[in-house]
Image (tube, rainbow, N blue to C red; front, top):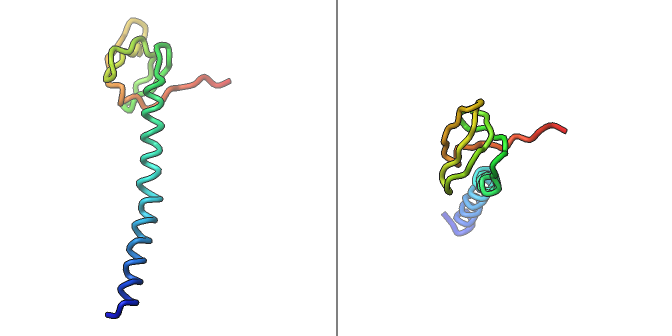
Length: 92
């Protein structure tokens, strides 16, 4: 192998790594950052959906790890905040 073919292989490997980063890693990092911001802005009264499919209203936020959600009248559950998938917004 000469120096030119080695240089081409290195450039190809770097190019493939760049494409993988741009298509897989970066979008996942962006999604994780948005999820963290959503959880930081979570307030009592917000209607939320969990990754397990429960839908309810946030009643209280105990600490950085858990929140109390009312899923039916007089039915409250404590959930791990990271498992809140989205804050549901009313259609206007």
